[in-house]
Length: 300
Image (cartoon, rainbow, N blue to C red; front, side, top):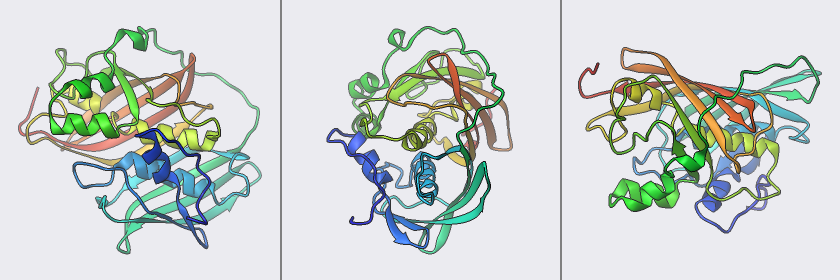
């Protein structure tokens, strides 16, 4: 694409496919097109991909995207996206103040809005500062890698995740991919980073977008843990409804990040999950996600 957003490249998969997906084409008048989607067994577009693409599109409306960094995104998933179809992004410039800017992003397929997000950006400024302390949990070297787990399981879904997932995830309290965790709990911890480090040319905007891409994979897990469920529970139905991210400080997904996740409530086929993300002892981001969680039968 001659008029694509400048995203660094990689020759290593699955990182190469992720970066290619973020390389949106500029169509003019704050319109963008994503020509490729990350492969999904469900046939539906992965929500984390669209969260990241929306950040990239919104940031491109600034002359220099690093002058005003995205600090929050509030998004709603309105319709399932078709992984085989291109996605168009329309960015509305809502305001540009001295310190803050707001962009409204709509993602569309076949003329219908499948996703909507409000992204807020801020000029780099000094101010009062405090943050929650990083939880004292054992380091990632103490837990099984999701890369090793997926490569060791002879199952189509595991083989797919092994070849397409850009993250290495280490679950402190045990993974819930294959079976429910031994202990019912509403809080869990996940270490994660990119399997392949991002290119040195990657900007902070791109790194923040990739954090959103990655974290969407496990945001609903505290709800599963609370009810002795797993991703493999027969006939379980899961989908993200809405998602909010607040970026507090610079982040680098190429190095280990600790996610502290907690679900305060689930009801009516919906569950809420809250997450804090720590890197190098600092709170770098906070997320909230509400999802549809429908189990085959009520669980205690």
